[in-house]
Amino acid sequence: MNVRIGIALTLAAVFDAAVGAEGGGMGGSEGKAVGDARGRVSALLLLDDEYGANFLIEDEIPSILEQLESYGWSLTTAAPKPEVRPCAWGSRNAGQKPFRPDITVRDLGDPSRYDVVILIPGKTQSNLQSDPGVLDFLRRAADRGTVIAAWCRSSRILAKAGVLEGVRIVGKPEYRAEYEAAGAFPAEVPSPAETPPPVSDRGIVTTLRSKYYRTAMCEEIRRTVESSVPRLSREREPPISRASSPAVAFFARAGQESEARILVESLRAFGGSLKDAPVSVLYPEDSPLRDGSDRRALERLGAELVPFRGDPRVMAFPLSDKAAAAAEAERRAEGRADVLVWLDADTVFLDEPSDFLLPPGIALAARPVHHRLIGSPYDEPPSPLWKRLYESEDVPESNLYPVVTTVDRQTIRPYFNAGCLVVRPERRVLRTWYAELARLIRDPAVVEEASEVPRGSLFLHQAVLSAVILSRIPREQIAELPFRYNYPLALHRSCPEDLRPASWSALTTLRYDSLGNVRGDAWRILPAEGLSRKLRKLFE
Image: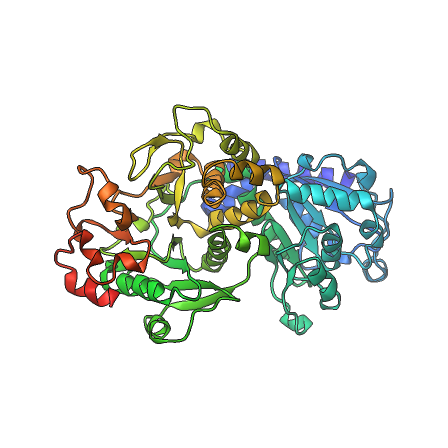
């Protein structure tokens, strides 16, 4: 390890011990999360000749290296040569000298040695770009879900490695054609002053303006690592307070304007203390909601209509486009709401959903699936598909507890319905779901195993969601929403009689599957005592 890094880590440990003895340190769950990660995150830093001055610079802002050292991570530096030169500005204005990395890139080894790979800014980075071994290493890191971060021009290396398909990035505008050729979605950068902040998408973090966004980029890398690496996510401190500022979001595309209007209108009518919660309707850029009375009603009801662009492979895989939408909804909710309620568009609110306000200690709430279908029976060994998902996502055995499906009452390992979830946005579960789904549908073995299971491809998105939750949220931080949530109207007659609700008023949220189940007299399959007038109006 580089001598300077080793000294810094030793000093950090001394200061940590002193702070701990005095009872000080950062407050809140975020500070605790950083402390827990100390010494257990392995980070690889790749740099080249003419490395950027912000890597080591001594000015009013801690350098990139200093900020990464402050996290207590185990840092390994690597370069194409035993010694690399600083950029001309760093040499001339900051007195920077050639840097000797810990290893050269021919000794990178297996990507599994690292939790995150960080490409340090540089003027040209031509040696890294032209090294087949480096490019292959980055591909293998991406294939296994390792977090990758790239500063400034480093995004060109990721483009050449072929790991940016369907990924939102921030990169130098002059290389936009290279990014787009690699399938990336580069942000617009009209001018340096209008450069967007760092972007984290599917486990890849990118930025420009290394000085201006130096701290913001390091923090975004840290947050991405702590939510993406299963062992780190599981060991985060549980939420300390009851949720009080919910946001609601769901996915809809052209042709689902009526469903979207019904959902929002029912929330405003029956949501009680949550009736004024902000609502986002996520729709694909290429399938916008159509103009008309329903869309105008959504705007009148205060719903925000949000276009998004997702990884083409995810968007084309059965039912998986909702994962891309959920990731965008969660990204927008972080810092604005303390819980995000993610729903399917065929949801109707019938009563105040107070259970959506998660209590202290709970990071996520959900309902089991309606039927077992591809679920994993609790008293049988996991199928090859589930076994692969559990291993790929590092799901601990202790999190594989029994749950009972809503309608057919089968006891299975946790398999959650993707149409009714409540998450703490800062835990980034929905973004991780999207990232892992995008990664796994690129794995031929996973796709083949899913195709060999009846309806396996159709529900792979939901299986991946469940594996992601179980790998990153401890069992004691997962709550099962009561039976009165997410009730399937279309399956009402299949529900056991002793559990079957007597009327709509016994439920909090209901799923009707298709408008045909609630238009005309069809909704009468379940009596709507005390609510019929309002319900009739909703479905007109």
